[in-house]
Length: 116
Figure 1 (tube, rainbow, N blue to C red):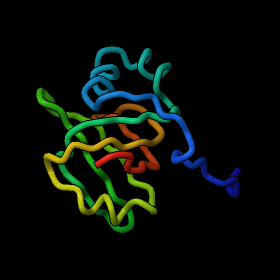
Figure 2 (figure 1 turned 180 degrees about the vertical axis):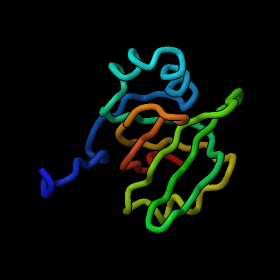
Figure 3 (figure 1 turned 135 degrees about the vertical axis):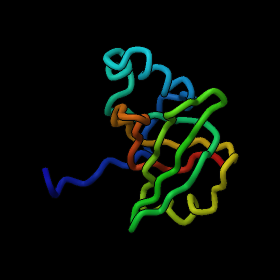
C-alpha cells in the first residue's frame, strides 16, 4: 500500500459544490455529509480568504459571505503550487480534490486548480 501510486484527481469527475454548501452540510449533519462527500472527489467553488505556504505545503482557504469561524481548506497538489501562490484574497476559484472530512474547516487534499 505504501508504494501504491496516488490517485490523480485531474482525471476524475468531481461532485460540484460551493464552499458554503459543503461547509454547511458538515456543520448541519456531519454523519450525512460524510456519506455524501468523505473520500470522494469534490469540485468546490468559492472565494479565496488566504493562501498559506508552510514548508513544502500550500493551503488555499475558501470562504463565503456569512462564514463565522470555518470554511474549506484545500491542500494543493505539488504540480499546482506555483499557480496557487498567485491567488489573492477575494479571487473566485474552483478547486478539485479529495474530501477528507470536517474539523474546524472542511479538509480537501491533493487539490488542483480547475478555474481561476
